[in-house]
Image (tube, rainbow, N blue to C red; front, top):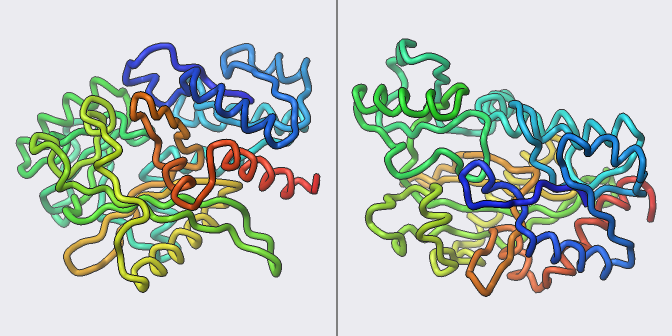
Length: 329
């Protein structure tokens, strides 16, 4: 396993794996019948991979720096010829870039909310981009930099928030139309194997905004995920009609294929009052925390448990999907 260990609850370490998660992954790898080897995803990772030469890497590393940081460990593994779990260099680079992901999917006629990217404060807003808007850092995950006050309804409010975000995150800011509707999260496990199999969609999870504190608004931001987080805010399986479930499953698998994801991923959608689905983002390296004692549960294992898997079985099946892809099975 290669990962970045979380040492604090700082916003910039929220994507890292805490010790409890590392221990659970270790148990899953051993349950699958393999020996566990740990490598920290730091500046020494390449040399440690070169020296230790694991048979396969269970990649959990978010990377240390740069707009394509989630591609660092896949890049190291490919240079060294070491198989690894999860999506490749190009996929992890594109998927961490929210605007680029939207551009790729729009080319494939997959609906995303209208958007514009601001690299500087003085860029004019496209007049066709109408309020309300939600502002997001372009190259972050885990709702980093996103809270209820990221939804802006006037030009002045947008400019004020842009000043704050450009200074804090030192990267372009995505402004997209705010779809004020139901939000769904989708987990995928497995791979496309032409003529033989497709990845499967785990039970769909819905964020129940009616259970949020009023000050959080209808935004699944950092405060909602940390300070005020509760598993009671989420419904899995989502209580939705079969036709909607099939629509969400079909578009999720299509996106997984278009972006060339591997083994597992998590996708987020919003549905407006007309029933139209809008892609929000995809994480090919989804969080897998499942610390029940503190009610700190990532969505992906919540969906896996809803399908009847325990944590060890979830890790085993993700690992086996990668092993099968590389021809080990």
